[in-house]
Image (cartoon, rainbow, N blue to C red; front, side, top):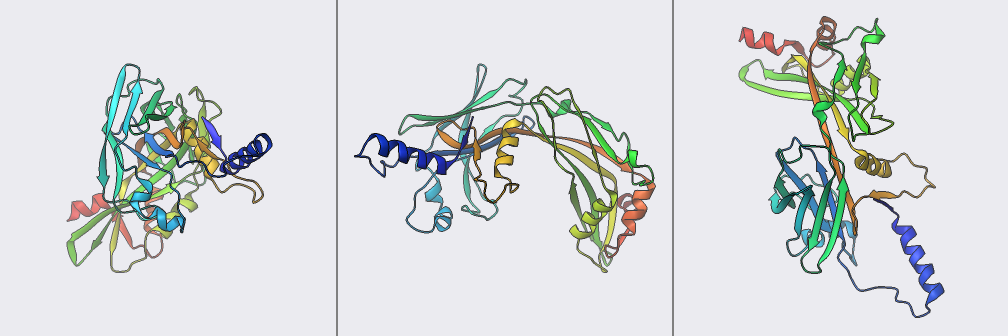
Length: 335
C-alpha cells in the first residue's frame, strides 16, 4: 500500500539526480504504467476490473482521455485473482452503457470473471496483472468480508415517523470484520400512472443517504448508531420527484433500508480524493497497486425491508405537488 504524490516524486527525483549526477536525463524512455480499479463484492455473480494505462499527450489531456487508444493497452494483459490455492482468470469484454465523463464512452473495455461462490472466507485476495510484452507485474492485496454477517438491530419491523419519540428515529447495527466504512440508505419505492392510461404504470424509487459512519477498528465488535431526520427525508423525496398534477403516484407499504459497507482500502482512497482539504494542502491520492496506480478494494451491501407506520403514510401523502393518492397495494387491489 502507498500514498502517491506525483508532485513530491518528481521534485525528489529532480534534486537527487542533480545533486549526484550532472549528466542527468530530464526525460526517461517511455514506460507503460498500469492503472487498475476493481471493487470486489462476494455476492456478485461477475466481477469487473477496469485496467488501462497512463498516457502522455502533447495536446489537451481531456481530449486525449476521450480517445480509447490513449487509455487501452494494444494487447490483452494476463489478469487473475489469487486466493489460497485458487486462481480466477479474467478475460476482456466490452460494455456499451458507460456514462459520459472525463474518459471515453459509451463503449469501454473491462476485464471480467465469474466469481460467485469463490470467496468463501475472510482471507486476503491478491490481484495479479502481468504485461505479456514487458513481463512486468502490477499487484495488489485487499481484505474481503461477508456483509450477511451484519445485523440491523433496530428498527425491528417499522420505520418510525414519530418525531415525538426521538429514540425511535435511530438505526443501530453491528460492525463486521475487515470493514471500516458504513453508509445507510433509505429507499422509498413508488409507482406513477396516468389515470387516463391505466396500463402506463411505472415503478420507481428514490434514495436518501445518511451520514457515513467509520468504525474504530476492523475487528467487527462495535455497534454503530445513526439518527435519521424525517423532515430531511421528506425533503429529499419532494426534491427528487418532479411535481405533477396529471400523474397519480402511489407509495409502496415497504421501505428498503440498506447498509453500504467498504473495507479500509476503499475508505483510504475515498478520503484521499474528497474535497475536505484546505486549499493550501496538497492532496495525496491513495493507491494500493504495486508497480502501478489505482484501487483494489472490497464493498458489500446488507439490506432489510421495513413497514411504514401510519404517520409515515400520512406525511408522504401530504407532500405538496407530488400527487400521492395512496399505497401501491391499495391501487392494485382496486384495479
